[in-house]
Image (cartoon, rainbow, N blue to C red; front, side):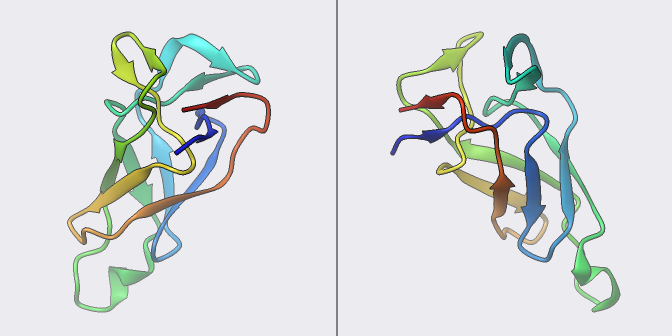
Length: 105
């Protein structure tokens, strides 16, 4: 499914409103002035609302399904319409605000 490419400046949240930050975006390709995110890019999640519930909060995350026709460094790029997962909860991450200039399939 086509969608906007996720870059390091995108606002990404876990399902419990924790802020997800890419730890190693792909530096050789910039979109809107920020490095893009590929499926190999790990995320660190801070502020997950599950931290006070007794369940373990979301700590890390990663995109697992992205572009099928666009890759950077041999790895598919992450798309806003792609699928991601947060660990250890297994809940999805959501890119709520992304750059509007470049899309991929």
